[in-house]
Image (cartoon, rainbow, N blue to C red; front, side, top):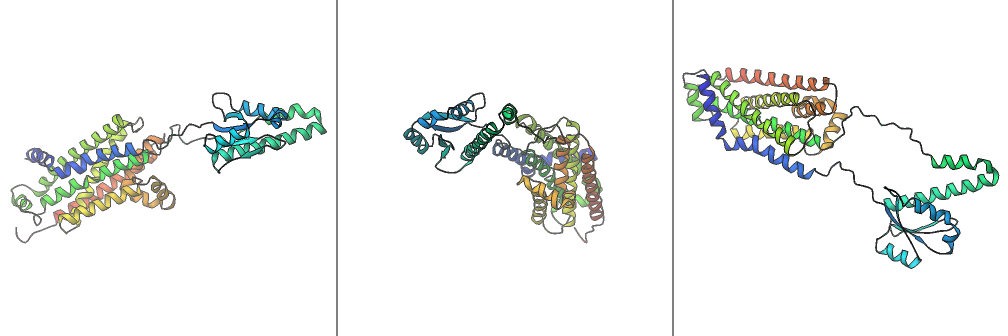
Length: 378
């Protein structure tokens, strides 16, 4: 009898177009939109050489070392400048046509001419200041101590970095993963709609179909268990399709722990369905109110997990960490985050334990509420 109920419950759920759309199709569509919208986030733009002109004339001939310095900085695979040399009129025309960021008039103190301020102009200004300072230092030292010139030139040509960047993981950071992982968390919590449907199906005061089920010669909990199992299989299958689509088609990375990722989806599916059963059993209003509560809880949790604004997740973790542990959506997304970024699985199992405890509490409370509910008449 249980298998018979289970079989036809699967068929019945597949015919529920609203359930199929919100739990299977909608996450796929949203993941596609995320992929298009977030495709350029985190990509570093290639640096373009700064267009600059050097005014030709007698002053330039008197400062050939400055000209040589500019030419050296305009060579190589990654030049700093894109240098042109011409007269005043040509340089001014190029500047007004925005072909260059500025032009330089050589002299004892080189003069920079720009139209507006910006990053390129700041780099040019900083370069001229540094050149003037180094030139003045060299002249002063040569005048007072010519023997120190070789050491000075060597020190000016050397740069040192005293900061070593060391991350907690060897994996490269990808800011888009927060959005995709939160989306999976939302898809898991959308399983609440299945749980809501199963509880409504055995509450005789909500529909004539539920009334017939309650007077049928089959224990109500057996009918309920068969329906929940059917919902779990369908929802978990939808999550696996979402995972495969995001991984193989959209190129979202989940790391090498595929088995653990699937475990997160399975526990997340149980969590979502059990949350839906609890909300449906607890809220005594109509189906519309129950659906509204499910959506509010799911979307609010997903928002705090960073699905709409990635920085929200980090803000919560920094300022209200307890909220992160109380938020089922954050536990789900953070489990995937921990699997991808961290070599240790301690954080992953901590999140998994939290999700399991939520599921146990939701299932236990649902059982107590449904088991104790009586009807005066059907």
